[in-house]
Length: 514
Image (cartoon, rainbow, N blue to C red; front, side, top):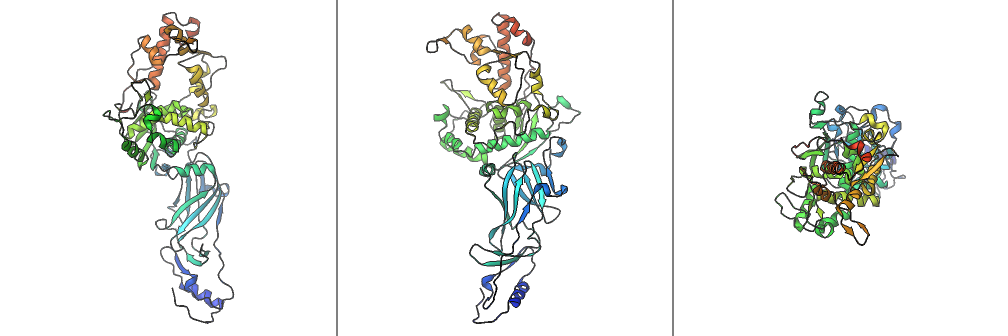
């Protein structure tokens, strides 16, 4: 601090001139603080003149504002592209343009975010300064603007009441910091996520020429959008009190413990260390696997097949494959219960997929997830069928009979939540209800026959599959086998069975990570 001289007369104009002369245009910002200058007898002190920009996406030039992950975009627009990489702990990010002195904001939020202030930390000011107000950031968008403070002299009043004058000839985000601030509820949810995952997209060698013979399918934007929702919800779940409580009391809550590839049960320390590891910095390349697999995963490869993009809103369906393949990425094999749940001696299914889909169901019921509405992106809607590889609604469109196991009281509700539509006059055939009197175990309390699990029904009819129950495809195989067995033994009505008698499934293909 300069030594203050007493009773020195300095004209206002001279003081201003002295200040301007004292400023130097260096590599970033240069400053002079008010308390370093003698203001004695200055009639008018400095006034704050920092200009905060107002940015309106719709009013920006077309070359500066665009939507990303457009349904009509080809996969070549998004796969293996640095610009189409997102970070789970920075889903709405700010970067410097490579072309000029502009800031580029990219939103990987599937919802719009309102009333956002962009603040920047200027080292010479030693404070965050509100640089711009953004009324609305659209979902899946990217836009840029040049902050007005760049290239001009600015005066800012600090929190302590002092004034600072600074000039930034250009943006230096190696020294400056940016942050977004908003009271928007969805924005605050996204800000809670602390998992440091970096995600991108890939076709994994799929081309139109190889077509359906390939292990993977084209990673179209409609699937990429759902992947963003899935990953966002997954990482958000890992921030909730419920998640942390269960991981600290897993056996008490879930009825058994998790165990690793060597069948070694998790200790309290292991639960804690895995909580940290699952959220640690990790790269994932997201894709779509062939319908021959529920998904493929391992290392950085994380893919699921078409029907999982329908089902993840319905908690159970979808999350089974999503978490299964994620655990392969975290180095767990089928020898653990991190990929498939396994029964305890008490008959309770315990495993990571079981835990996550139940947690998702609970949080979805509470409304404590970033995304719960399947209509938000409309993956299932008829108008978006041309952008999908799969047409599940087309399969159901002309169906006469819907066969399932516990479908009337359970599965049908999840199908509807996932947007699956079927004719109003379709016949329902629930094997669980039909099998109960065949097995004949009486329930005194209900005064009715006890409902049996699918595994018991499969055992009764001699089904020997090659996988575990609660694997989607294996459950379908078992259900179909039991249904056809009922028909052949005359336990199902022929007229109900006609539509499904000849249905068959392709044999399960084994890959690196199923």
